Length: 157
Image 1 (spheres, one colour):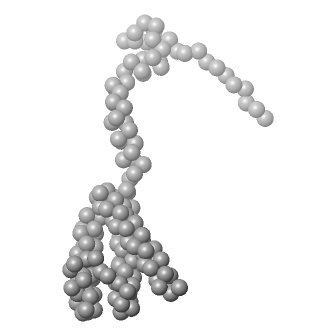
Image 2 (cartoon, rainbow, N blue to C red; image 1 turned 45 degrees about the vertical axis):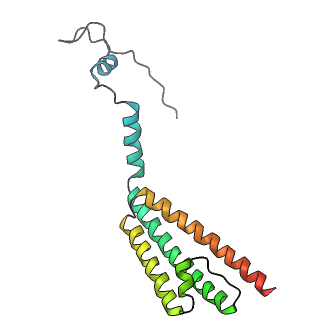
């Protein structure tokens, strides 16, 4: 069963001691309200409340991207060594070019650079710029993986 809707008139506070004549309870509450904050402060507060654990989520994403970079870099190292053994490969990196004849030295060099960059990424994992840089590196190494795929498809045909 539906309840009837009852509308009441605002209460006039004329008779109340210390009340301004003619003010309703609502208008008095508005008049006594603290001043509003600027819009940018309200937006910033709302963003912080919504984001909450954003640095923790960012740290997790950076960690996962670093793991992805390790997988892609080990694949790149493997493909570099295979292409060098096939004899149809020219390394453009002058440091790596000198190490191609010694696979152990190339592996140590590549893994040392990877460990150093991973350490930097993980040390600053809660910083937004780190996430952007790590994502950029993932894009570059993903593109390089596609280049290796096309390279080996051309060799096999």
